[in-house]
Image 1 (cartoon, rainbow, N blue to C red):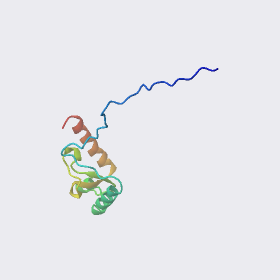
Image 2: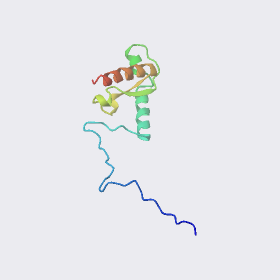
Image 3: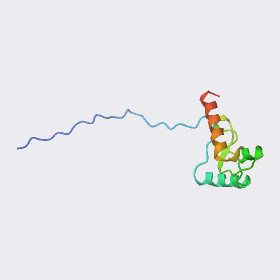
Image 4: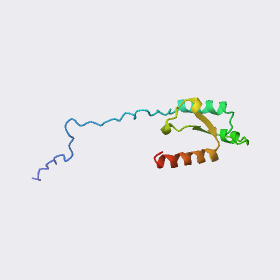
Length: 108
């Protein structure tokens, strides 16, 4: 007669009463729009700015802009309202993003 197989005891157990904790957003943070709502917002800002990079316009050399950017970054206390958004070309968007990243990395 072949030997009888025995089952192994489970080695992984859960702690009694343990649950996954879902963290709430930090106080004062702005929830970003996601999905189609964000697409509609970006298209509205591009139309408002007539497809022009607003930094190029300020410098007196209007050029095409495609990227919609927050004027005051959300992490710096900016809002997600249309008044805090602008259309930028890639060059100005990259420069602005790099400056914001440097400020954020330095704690400011």
